Length: 625
Image 1 (tube, rainbow, N blue to C red):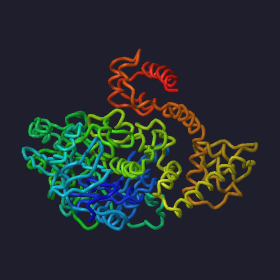
Image 2 (image 1 turned 60 degrees about the vertical axis):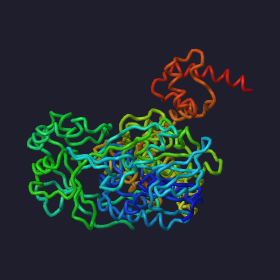
Image 3 (image 1 turned 180 degrees about the vertical axis):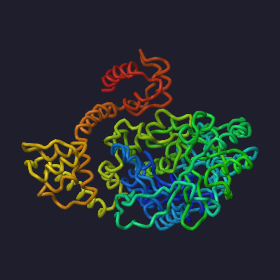
């Protein structure tokens, strides 16, 4: 193990793995420190990858050359496309993982990556000189030198697990926590918060009566997460999940013991996530609801542990046992692991640049739940960006930024860095203003060229990508020119779709745009249609159907880009700009936005303030000339 490296990664969770792989694949010697190498890419909470909006992030990580999508394709046990009753902008892929195989496969990938070294040790101090990172010190006092460090602490920093009156100083799942690094970070000027998340109990499969539950099956046609995975290569027999519900008796037990919940007694200081509340929080907040969904999900193929989705809790042990047994199918359940809340340190993400490097120390980057986000996917997305920029920083190259118009990754990081968060941040499709352009199906078309330029996508995969892109463009051009004459075949198609017949010729593209029709449905009347891969056909159909909406959003992006391209000076004191409100000046000085668009999204900065900054920029430009 070298005692110096180009890049040091602290933590081997989902953020740390993506950061380490990115920097190593870009040719930088990289050391990953983990408190336990048995917890690489562990899943201490829900055993799945993807889901609403999170599936977009995984697809984007893959398009940039990351590993999360490839790893879940290898280790999934059930796969499902969500939101298919809605438009393609909100389709989201979600896969149940064999959590143990997922961890082992990711560890194997790290171990077999050139330039990458794993080390089981706890980092206790960040070394800084003259505002620049110089390396780290481990628990044993060993010094490791580096000019680029990425902190991916997850939920381990000064963490404690709590249920009822029981409080245990530990990381998730009983793993050792990290108690010293928070103090080191505070000494170098990093502002910290206390956040909270939680997990439900795990129950022995043999004690569950599945006949009282509704089976939940995976999709027959599995869509891979990775654009480099062939559908036929990952087809397998899938394992069922199950759906059941809480009831009045469940809610009664919770309400009778609500005073014993550390969330409501004041024992927990940290702020919890609004969009993934505990069962006691749901029962208190939604008292009019007679029941809440409970998903019973396997944690892997070789274990009897079942995850009780929707019932995260920090109630005492006796209450948990009574509460779970009121649920249909769980009357005789045996708890294997109790549910708990976990409280931990997170940083104020507004102290970071869009590159995820802190403004306080050059060469020091942060990624994952440490930045105030929640979820494996949000962590992985930040990890790959931090790893890329940690490598670029060493070469004095411009940082790589995905903006809001290019990806959900851009929305995620921009929200955290610009607005900050007072509670664990969860990605949602509603946060993306250009979501029709940022679909999960076209993540490769949006981002693969970046991955190739950065050296994270190999030539073979890039050539396949360019071939796909050319096929889509060629077919779109062909379809736009095809005229369809009235015929008995077309009449039958229109009749089956409850559409009126046509008496004159019509463009094929105009037929495809009709809600009741699509590209594949019209193959019988399209005599010159080429034999194209399924993903190409899907892109052709979507791009034709939503052409008007896509064009409209592209015009909005043009305006957005104009704001993003107005770079702001770094040395300005905004409180001294004449006409700018004091509150806006203070907020701008705190964040130090990189461009005008960035400034416009800061809470407390109004359109009138932006107008003042525009006038200032003109005079600043003249004075600097």
